[in-house]
Length: 148
Image 1 (tube, one colour):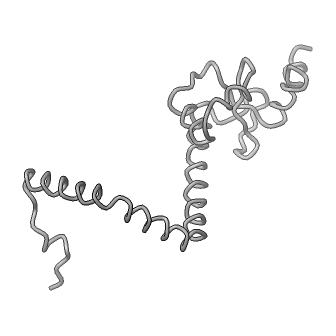
Image 2 (cartoon, rainbow, N blue to C red; image 1 turned 180 degrees about the vertical axis):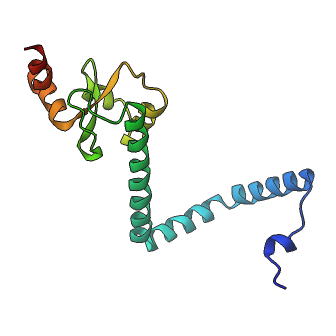
């Protein structure tokens, strides 16, 4: 019968766990410079591999955030009804989107804001054509056509 490492390992009491945590923390504090040097050396040896993996993780996180944002705001252009994900943008209803976006450190933090804190009445989903028309003309041509 095969015995896994978790089966061999004995469970620690809360006191033992705390003592072990403190001992490990003290070790890391005493060896901080050596540890940092080893981490830097590892990074420089494996830079391309690390960056490639990070790009994959970031790309996947961005896709998941985008799906959540589109779902939160309705998932289709409020003007023309376009629902193809690649054509959709988040629009600031009252303008000022570029200025607002620059307040965030990264696109990730901006997307997190949209998912967690943004109010539905301040943002809307527009397709790229309607968003550009709103920017250039002040109003989408679909809305102009609806008036006549």
